[in-house]
Length: 379
Ligand SMILES: Cc1cc2nc3c(=O)[nH]c(=O)nc-3n(C[C@H](O)[C@H](O)[C@H](O)COP(=O)(O)O)c2cc1C
Image 1 (cartoon, rainbow, N blue to C red):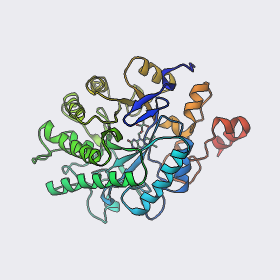
Image 2: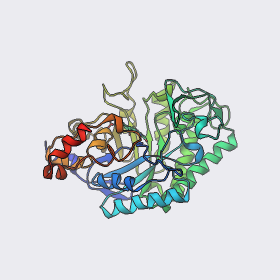
Image 3: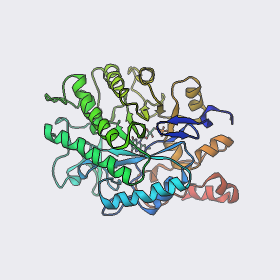
Image 4: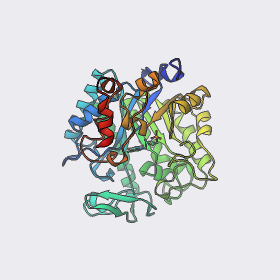
């Protein structure tokens, strides 16, 4: 393991010089198990434990009551949530870290359980496939959503604007627009889920409009150097697809260049990863890397070795790590030292208590008490 690896060199992202090229990928952990979906003291600890990453991106956080699709996910639309997140950002900053919040509206990937008995909303009435809603009643069938009116689309852009204001008030260094994985922004971009006939549907210019208006709203509030966007051009979540993914995402990326954003974050998982492109699907990430004139983050199945390879080959400037970060809060130090990694426990990824959330030991703790690691695996 090379300590001189480019992984551990600084890189400028928007308003910040990151000390290394590792990014904590946004990950829903469903621990805001309280009536207001407010981040808790455990949330504070979770992010502080990971503060040595070049950049932390929080779990997807709903921008409005309508934007929710999973139980116990935190929001960024109430005063209590802002106050809860303020504790997180203060503590991460005190620990020397930088943290962006991922702004999330799930669109169709929701359930009447979360919507006062009403249907979830989406660009068009297209039922998501092969995905279930996780409510207090367990896994439930997702119904066909209701198409938003044009006025409601514009109001949703304003919800993103308000969420960006709330993020600023909560002390975040910036925001990441969740434009990936088949959620609302992605549902507008791709033509399998966008069959609208107004200014937000039809041509690629119209399908990109919602994403670009949401980005503009966040840029208005925070400045472009504090706004990033995440896209998944080859993702298939909820059965989402586009008749011309390369063309659609290339157009969108060209338009994103006009803002001078902090970064573009692309999920294009390596072969063999559950999120990897299906057989026969062409990769889109390399084309977007060439088009985008700013910091480029890649994610999906990376290890230290494959991350170093991607950086050395100029495929990306930064690599986001998801699952490796769940079990290894000090992933930077472990990679630097060539240390063994803790094994993530899938049973505690979503929901539950502090076990599997904030009790994975750091290397330092493990060296002091070797039995800790055994303990966590046996539980
Ligand atoms: C438990 C879990 C929760 C996730 N939640 C989110 C999320 O809130 N927002 C998002 O954009 N991606 C989410 N993802 C996807 C990850 O950010 C990442 O793209 C994926 O895990 C692949 O990267 P990895 O191979 O490094 O884990 C989640 C993944 C996992 C495992």
